Image 1 (tube, protein in one colour):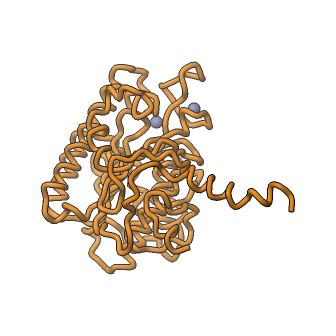
Image 2: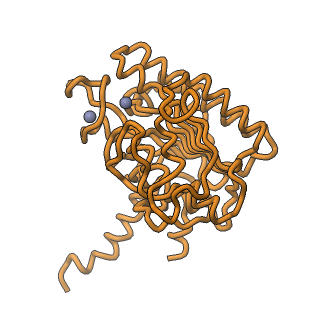
Length: 321
Ligand SMILES: [Zn+2]
Ligand SMILES: [Zn+2]
């Protein structure tokens, strides 16, 4: 027998072990405890000013919350590194070269549409709340079987598509009000910072945008934990649509949109009752996997999605295989 074949089983064990994070293995078992799922997209920070900064200067809340969840250090946008493309990958599990101005709907339905179809719940149980008006397109799709059906509620931009961006502080106030008034089961959020200040070539405001959005995620998680409706049964994913160019490449932090490592490398913090706490996971994942994992937790199938369930976060597949 060739030597490689002899050592292959050992090699396999070694390789498998090497991708499992070295955290306490109190993995979730079925059924999942997650009943509510929130995804917050902070638009366009670079990894280097967020988790990739060893001192984590601008993200004190992210650091605080990381003790209660799992931080992913190798999460990548493997598609198009523009706002609408990144958000579409997160909601549909499909990397699509979609128009970035709000002039085109995603090809396939979002996890919100799938969940509303499956559960028959009212639309007020699922919300898309975004600072950027153009992201209202995330609420619907082109697929004729789904177009204009099972639509989540939307609260996007100043007052809907093509009305302009609003301030993130306004968006955050709306988020709090919707939680109080409707107790939604699903919420998908976009904050425009630090992307907007990056494009304005304002380094200090870009950093302030990271600080401000970090504060919102801290407040949001605390608010959910203080509410008996959400405490202990709610998952929160904090992530990004894309990063920005590396220093020394094109105009650096000002822009994004290509395949450079700065544009592709994004953050993910996963908080919730089905995940390990105080864990750092270096397993490589792709942005569409976040959608697939959200679908898994909420018990829905998304046939068009190309994402894979993040098996080191939600281990149902591993334990069943
Ligand atoms: Zn941008
Ligand atoms: Zn780039």
